[in-house]
Image (tube, rainbow, N blue to C red; front, side, top):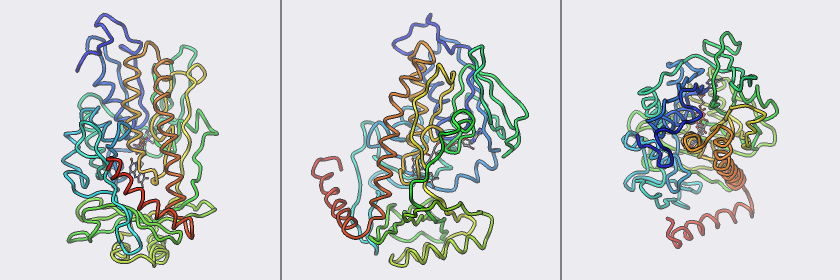
Amino acid sequence: MAIASNMTPEEKHFLAGKRIIVAGAGMAGLAFVTGLRRQWNPALQPPEIVIYERDTQETSVSREGFSLSLAGYDETGGLYALKQLGLLDEVLPHVLLGLEGTGSFKVWGRDFGEQMSVRYKPARGLPSAGIRIARKNLRKVLLDAVEATDNITWGSACVEAQKLASGRVKVKLARGEHDSKADDEDECDLLVVADGASSKLRACLRPDDTLRYAGAVQLGGSAKFEDKIPHPLDDNWGMLLSGRGVACFLSPIDHHSVVWALSRLEAQERRRINPNDPETAEKVIQEGLDLGHMFGEPFQTIVKATDPATVFSMPARDKQPFYHDVSDLGPIVFIGDSNHAVSPFAGYGASLAMKDGWDLAEQIRAASDVERAVTSYDAISVPRAIKVIKESHWRIEMAHSTGIKGMVFRCFIAFGGFLLWLTGRA
Ligand SMILES: Cc1cc2nc3c(=O)[nH]c(=O)nc-3n(C[C@H](O)[C@H](O)[C@H](O)COP(=O)(O)OP(=O)(O)OC[C@H]3O[C@@H](n4cnc5c(N)ncnc54)[C@H](O)[C@@H]3O)c2cc1C
């Protein structure tokens, strides 16, 4: 560990020897812990970090059944965050697509005719501008890094938090999975909230700051193939556009499965389905085939090969980020989806979450008190998330556009690809 150049060993730090609670061992929480351990001045007494995770270790693994895009074309991407965290070498062996010229994000027409192939230049020091990786493999790398220095308390949900007169924070805990009734409590000098999009702690501290429906529904699942997966999904991922209001995202998850997510605009927000009901699963698969009837092969083959246990039907939801008011809220910071949930249409939520973790740790290291640390963290994180959410709304609108608007969008795609090439960014 390097000593920060702007600190002397004699210098005190406001968190030296203090207690930090991290609520949630997802992308943001794990990146924060590794980031802080990595950047902490070794001449100072380290803080004690306590990580509470709602899931048990077993359920946590079963929830990780899809793949993620991680961006690396600039310093806001997840690949860049992994480099900062010192975990790039651990992650690269798990990359599914995107390294050494293999695969890239495609926009396809109805019959999988290529309309655009996006391959940016990687940011300095990165081997790729964008990769696909199984979520479970990325999480495992982050977990291994944290478990080398700190313990995770599994099966313990943080359900309430309260600023105390002493300046510390009291956190109420519910032990045992999905139990929302508090039966224990803990105290800390800093609470880092990283409990995801449906944050319990946000509901407690900011009850009006809820997720908003972004106007589109996604239904899909994972298709399994004993042999190899069909071309072009064997070495590409991307979006099928119909020009008739329906789009479909497709990506390999590993060498034997493909995730598909068919989407369209709907005025009313749909309810999530019960994932344990096989009849509902069959209905969703049939709806996928009906809505996507205009798409050519291998769309039908993929949807028909869906494992019913993996089927989902979910409204796209997100929320705008907020700036913290530490004097009012106390020493509590929301990072990742708990602050600024993004829908899968962003393709950037994990990138934002890991960057948040690293950036908060960096601002804490450099600041003289928690208020200054959080203010400078917000100045980095909030505009970054606003931009990503805005782009995802544009993507939702354009991917489902019809008529003249749809035609203009397809011309834009063709021209956009040409422009990237012309300006040397692709
Ligand atoms: C279908 C789908 C596809 C996606 N595709 C992409 C993509 O291609 N690229 C991309 O960058 N992003 C993608 N995302 C978004 C990405 O997964 C999230 O933005 C990212 O995981 C957010 O990280 P986080 O740490 O904030 O939250 P999470 O990863 O959700 O982690 C939160 C953690 O907190 C735990 N927890 C929950 N409640 C509590 C509590 N009360 N107390 C303690 N612990 C709690 C949870 O169990 C979990 O472990 C996708 C998301 C979905 C749903």
